[in-house]
Length: 531
Ligand code: MN
Image (cartoon, rainbow, N blue to C red; front, top):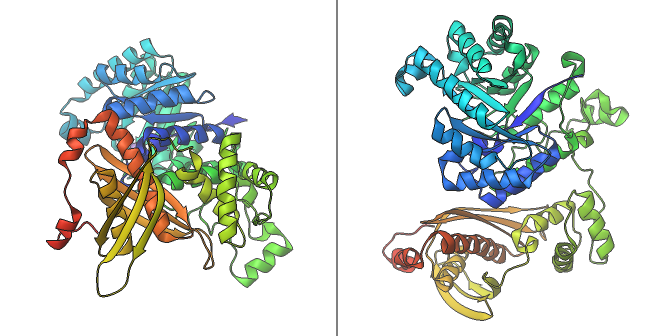
C-alpha cells in the first residue's frame, strides 16, 4: 500500500506559537516521543535563529535514530550551512529550505522579481544538495502563487536536486477544492515531478488545515506536515493525529497508510500538554478528554449494545487508557512498577525507586491513587530527577493567611548542605511564599504565569501547580504536585528557579542577576506588584 510521510513540525512551527516555547531538554524529550510515535520526519528547529535553536536541533539529531531530522533554513548560504551543521550527525538528516513565491510576498517582503526568486531557489537547493542527499524545498505562500510560475519553480528545484517539494497554504487561505486542484495541477504539468515527493503544509486560520491536507493527499501529495494537537503559528497547523486517524479510519477512501503507531498518540499529546502547561481542549478531536465519552442515554445504550453504533474508532487505538486498577497504600513496589510500565513509562530502577517513595507518601495522604495521580508524579520534575546538591530543596514552611491584612510566610530551603530561612509578606499566601523563596535564593524574577489544577476529583486530590518565571536569561517553567497547594506552589517555583539559576550560571555572570535585585515588598508598599 502507498504511504503518506508524516512530517512533524511541533518543535519548529509549533514551538513558535506563544505559550509553547520549550527548552532544549524538553525538546529532546518531545523528539524521543515523536520517534516512538513513528512520525517519519521531525523538523527540530530553525538552526540559524539562535544558538539555542541550533543546539536543540543538534541534540535532537544525536538523540533519535529511527526518524529523519530536518532543520529549516531560508534560501541563504549561511542558513543552509547552519542547518546542515545542526543535522549532519543525525542518522537521517534533511535540509529544509524555503523561499516565498507569491507575488504579494515577492513584492512586499522580498522585493524580488519572479526570475530572481527562481534563481535564488535553484542555487539554494543546489548548494543544500551538495551537503545532504535529502533536501526539501518549500514554496512559501504556494496557495497564493501564480500557477504557471509555481510549476516553473517546482520543475527547476527538482532539477537542482530537491527530493521533496512542499506546497504550503502558509496563511490558511485555501479551500479544499483549491488545494486538490493545486496539487493535481503540479502533478500533471511538471514533467520531472515523479523525482520528488509532493508535500502539503496547511494552516488553520479558517479551520480547514486538516481538510486541506487531506485534499492534498487525495490529489497525490505523499507528505503531510503538521503538529501534535495542531499547534503552530496563529491558529496553528494541521493536527497530525487527526490526519493520521482520518487516513486510518477511512482506509476505504484513501487506500493509504502511515508509519504512525496510533496507540502512542494520547501519550504524545499528554507529553506536549505536560511540558508546555497548555491543556488540551476537552472537545479536541482524537485526544480531547471528551473525544470518547458518550453522555446521552441513547448513545450510551447504543455503545453498550455494540460499540460501532457510535464509535468510529476505538479509544485503545489512540492510546486512551481504560480506567485502570486503583492503587493504595498497601500496593507494593511490584504493582507500582507494573503500573508505570502499563502507562508507557520506561524508567531506570533508581527513578522507579524514588517515585515509589513519592507514591507511598501520597498514598498515606490520599485513599486511592489513580493513574492520573501517577502521571502527575512522574511528570513533576521533583520526582523525576535525582536532585543535584546544587539545587535548592524545600525543607519546610509556614504560611499565615486571613482577611484584613497581608499574608506572611517563613520558608526554609537547603542547598549544598546549607540551610537558609527567610520570611516575607504579600497580598496572598502564594505571593508571600514565592517572595520568601526569592529572598533566599537572592535572585529576582517575575512571575509570568501561575496555574493550579486538581489532578483528580474529590477533596483529597493532588493539586498540580504550573508556574512560569522569567529573568534576563529567559523564561522557565516549573511544576509541582502536592495535596497542599502552598507546598505545590513552592515546589513548582523551586523547580523553575533551579532551572533559571542553572541557565544563569552558564550564560550570564552573577553580576547581571544581582543588578536586578530589588524588593518586591518595596513595590508592594508603593503599590507596584507583579501579583
Ligand atoms: Mn507554517
